[in-house]
Image 1 (cartoon, rainbow, N blue to C red):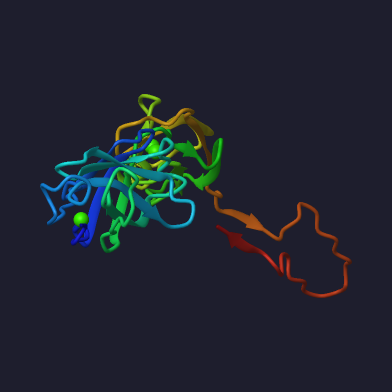
Image 2 (cartoon, protein in one colour):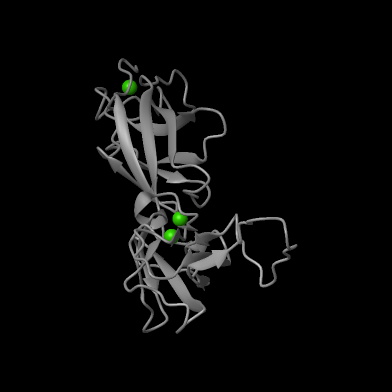
Amino acid sequence: ANKHKPWIEAEYQGIVMENDNTVLLNPPLFALDKDTPLRYAGEICGFRIHGQGVPFEAVVLDKTTGEGLIRAKELMDCEAQKEHTFTIQAYDCGEGPDGANTKKSHKATVHVRVNDVNEFAPVFVEKAYRVAVSEGKLFERILRVEAIDGDCSPQYSQICYYEILTPNTPFVIDNDGNIKNTDKLEYRSEHLYRFTVTAYDCGKKRASEDTLVEIEVKPMCKPSWQGWTKRIEYTPGEGSMALFPSIHLET
Ligand SMILES: [Ca+2]
Ligand SMILES: [Ca+2]
Ligand SMILES: [Ca+2]
């Protein structure tokens, strides 16, 4: 007779690497049956997975010990789905070879997390950046460049470093992509700076394409007199006349 139903834990945590299908389960999957060592009634014949479109299957490795494993039916894609939750149930072999009167365990919850693989390189939002700044000033920030990354985890999708590749520029970039000048720029010596910048994700994968930054230097306006003309019309006998009524110094 088959007196007892199999027993499994209430909950399991699984980890599967992206692009793989082996699930590491904690705790390991063992279905226990108190009818052991009775043949059939004390043996585990299978696991059943419940849930809609669950891309996992469970197989029995050893009928006698009730050891089983869960594996993905297809290669996992972290970018498509990071976590899968489903339920699993064990059943014994019943009362004979025909599998009559099998008993099922309760349903256990399984959470499987997909671990990210660093497949994507950072990509700059803009192919090139151009900005114009006044000469003679030190700026807190001239512009910000930004790269994004398609991986699913912070480690492999966040940008950890930006780097100016062109040597000897009077600019620095911080880890958020903010660019500032290290020296006051002078229109007389350089009208336009061009340099390339790259980015690395926190897994040290470099951007597939660098971006170009162009910084145009605008001359400061020199102070000059405005509102005067070289020629003045004066009709004799009109008395006094202001020479340049709207003259002012523009800076
Ligand atoms: Ca049993
Ligand atoms: Ca990445
Ligand atoms: Ca990935």
